[in-house]
Amino acid sequence: MAERQTGSALFYGDAVSATGSTQLYPLGTKREEEGRTFRYVKYDDGAGDVTAVSGRVCGHLKGSATDASPTAWNVTMDTSDSAPNACAGVLQAIIVTGQFGWILTRGIAQLITDGGDDIILGDALVWDAADTGVVDRPAAYSTSGLLERPVAVALQADNDAGDYVYAFVCCD
Image 1 (cartoon, rainbow, N blue to C red):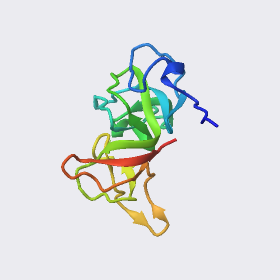
Image 2 (image 1 turned 30 degrees about the vertical axis):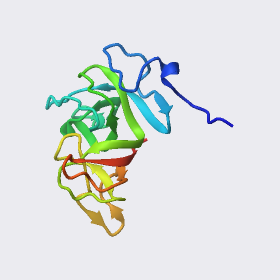
Image 3 (image 1 turned 90 degrees about the vertical axis):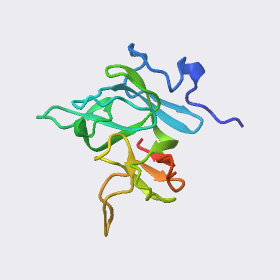
């Protein structure tokens, strides 16, 4: 029996790398292709004017100073403008601020690391708050486990020359 697909480029009419100024789907629309899950988002470069970079991690944009709750499916790479531990996924393209596109929320992806060359197979990976859009090993473990929310699990040791690692992303 053939596997049922819940989404494809034919159904959606665009690729997961497509971006644009016109909103084509409701924000947060879930799309599944080839065992990977994507969400439709709007990008905001944040107060730090952080340009979106494909393959980098982004987070849910936090609310105002009086409401720190995440803004649904508005995302940024600016760690100062993201709700703590609210990683949304991995950008699939360069999305201009105020425009729309897809992020990977579950599945295998190549992620940019902090360059510390310390990631090994099986490491939990977290969004590095000190380095925009990259992942790293958690800064600390406690006796009960991680102190930070993992966004992925390393499927290999990081590539020292290229500062990347293949990982299974688990944000959704």
